[in-house]
Length: 71
Image 1: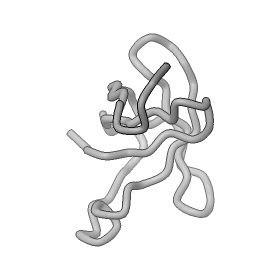
Image 2: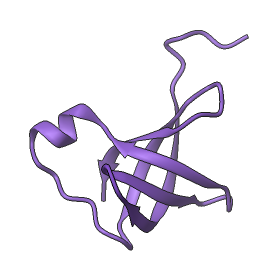
Image 3: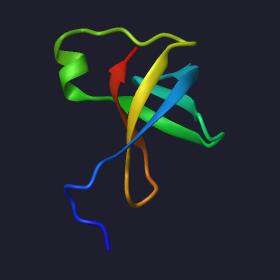
C-alpha cells in the first residue's frame, strides 16, 4: 500500500496543449496522460510548450498528472 507522501516522478514529452492549462503528455514508457501545471510553476509563470520535456508527478489513483519541472 502506498503512503500519501510517496511521489512517483516520471519524465515525458508534451504532445498537445489543451484548454484550461491542461496538457497531453506522452511518458517515456509510452503512456499517454493528462497533466496540469503545478502551483509553483504558475506562480513563477514558467511556460510549458509543445515539445518540452517535463517531469510529472503521477496520481496514485490514476487521475491527472502534475507537471512539476520543465527541462
